[in-house]
Length: 354
Ligand code: PEP
Ligand code: MN
Image 1 (cartoon, rainbow, N blue to C red):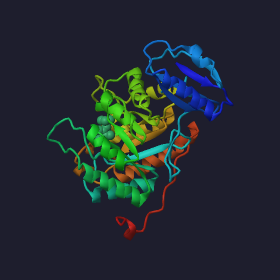
Image 2: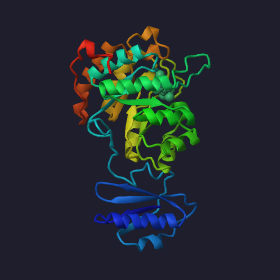
Image 3: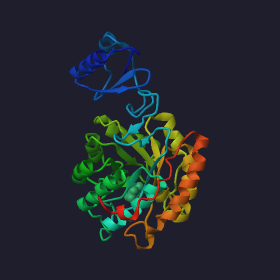
Image 4: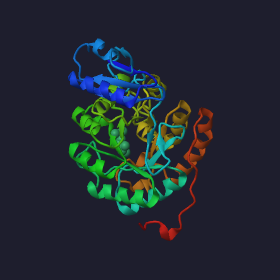
C-alpha cells in the first residue's frame, strides 16, 4: 500500500500518518518527492484498511501496489533519486555522470596512490578498490582487510575522491560502513538477504551489483531488501551476467539500463570491466553505457596491470582511462549529461603526502 499525501501536506501531517501506520503494526517509509510525499507501507501480510488512513488530514489517496517491489518503484517516487555526498559536488543519479575508478583490489599504499592520482586527474569523483575480495579460489589474494580500508581513507583525504568498497559479510560491513562513502555489495552476494538487510540499516549509500544470473525482478527485489530496512540510497550496478558466450568473461546486459529506469527511480551505473573481463573491450562498452543512459561507470584501472593481484586482464592502464574519459566526454552531451573535467596534475612532492 502507498499513501499519497496532498501537495501542500505539512510535515506534521506526514508524521501523523506514519505514526498511524506504525500503530497498526506496519512500517512506514516516507519518501519525499518534488511534487508530493508518498508513504510506503511494508510489513503488512494482507490488505491494510485503507479507510483508516484515507480519513487522516493531508492524505490525498491510498493506493494498492500490485508489483512485488514497492519502495524501488516509480509508483512511490516519480522523479530520479539523486544521491549526494556532503563536502563535494559529486552526485550519483543527477545530470553529471558518476565516474568511479580504481584498482580491483587495494594491494599497497603505493599502488593505491599511484592509481588514485591518475584517475583523479582524469576526472573520477569516486575511487574504487576492494579491501575484502570475494575470490573464486580460497588461495587467491583475499584483500588487505582493514589496512586496505585505511589506505582508501588516506586516498580520500589526499584527493577528495569519495570511496567505494565492498563488504562481503556482516563483520566487514561494520568496518566498511565506518571507513567508506559507498558500501558495495558484490554480484555473488546480491541475494545474501541477511547482508542486504544489514546494508539497509547502514547510514551510507549502497552500490548493489547485479547477481551473475539475476533477472530484472530479482535485482529490484534485492534493492527492495535494502530499502525496506530504511536505507533509501541504493545505486544499482549492471556488471554482466553468465551466458553461453565465451568471448567475454560475462555478457554485459546494457538493455537493463532503460528497463530499470522505466520501473525504478534508483540510479543505475555500469561496470564494463567485470562485464567483459577484457581490457580492450572496456572503453567501447563504456561509450555504449553512457549512450544507453547509464548514470555512471565503475571501471578498474591499475598502474601495472600485469602485476595486479586480481583482475589485471580487465584493468585499464591509466593512459587508456584518460582516453576513455575523453571519449565519454564527447558522448555524454548527446544524452544530456555532463562529465567532470580533467584536473591539473598535483605537484609531484604533494602526491603521497597527507
Ligand atoms: C569487484 O567490483 O571487484 C567485484 C568483485 O565485482 P563483482 O561483484 O561484480 O564480481
Ligand atoms: Mn575486480
